[in-house]
Amino acid sequence: MAEKFVTVFLDTPNVELNDYYIDETFSLIETAGGEVLQTFTQKRDTPDNKFAIGKGKVDEVLSFIQDQPVDGIIFGFDLTSTQVKNWNQVSDLKIIDRTQLILDIFAQRASSNEGKIQVELAQMEYTLPRLMGLGTTLSRLGGGIGTRGPGETKLEMDRRHLRDKINKLKKELDKIEKIRQTQRKSRQGSSVPKVALVGYTNSGKTSLLKRLSKSELEGENKLFATLDPVTKKGYHEGLAYTVTDTVGFVQNLPHKLVAAFKSTLEEVVYCDLVLHVVDISSADPIVQINTVNKVLEELKAHDKPTIMVFNKIDLPHDEFVLPSMANDHRHINISVKDNINVDSLKNMIVEHFSNGM
Ligand SMILES: Nc1nc2c(ncn2[C@@H]2O[C@H](COP(=O)(O)OP(=O)(O)OP(=O)(O)O)[C@@H](O)[C@H]2O)c(=O)[nH]1
Ligand SMILES: [Mg+2]
Image (cartoon, rainbow, N blue to C red):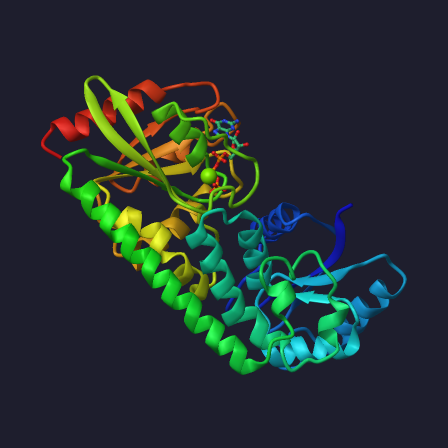
């Protein structure tokens, strides 16, 4: 059975709230296996130091959860450790902020050794220090959202143990990263052109990879279905190339997480051609494109040759804005699902590489 939550959102001049952001948070909660019973929002100039929201709103939340079967409170933004502590003092329920929610999904989905270590490290660096020092609240957490992943059994560790563990994980990660570099170099040594799929989570990257490479991977209608890069071989009109799938991007992905997942995204840095996949049926494709571009800039991969792939044209969408969303890049409208224009996209890839890259 799904865990039940109330959600709390802040609308400040700094971080303006919109339906799109709220919907995305709901999708994240659903992906994590939770269900939203009630939502509270508050407009303020700045977050309250003690509880993020004002005392009146806090009371409203507390009185709602008093006689409802609620498992926890999920905040659509990040809390300071003081705010976490204060919430834990007024409520026995789980207190989960945005980064914890995303980390929880990552913990469920990471499948490679590297992905698992990265999640564990990010959880130790973010979640555990906040939970530590809270004493009894830890045992109240039980299981489920916000406690999944390696953190669960390790909550009781003392700080020094935690620090040792973090260092050990970092060393392990270094080792794996070196191996990855070697593999990448050997791939670079070959003349096989490298294509990387990037895009917002749920845009259809994994489904497209399957079409481009005829691999067995299935797309999933969940956020962050793919956490580890997957490279497959593609072949079209006499050209052999590799296609690498990547983790989906999300609005306001906390910086710490960007760092944690940098090595998985580094494949993008070393590719020859970027396919930027966009779900044009989503509520706000332009926000998604900008989010992806921002991360690409952070990776210094923003000036790679790029084809904008506008996916899901089988669904209702705004035809008119598409060309302007391409930002000077070549673009193509496709439907992975109905196999519309996928061959034309393959032709574009072949053409790109036969024109001397
Ligand atoms: N209607 C429609 N649905 C599509 C199309 N392409 C993909 N989908 C669906 O969109 C959902 C997400 O697809 P994925 O391929 O998992 O998306 P992704 O970009 O890999 O997602 P992450 O790995 O989470 O970043 C799945 O339910 C797909 O079946 C399309 O052209 N049309
Ligand atoms: Mg995927």
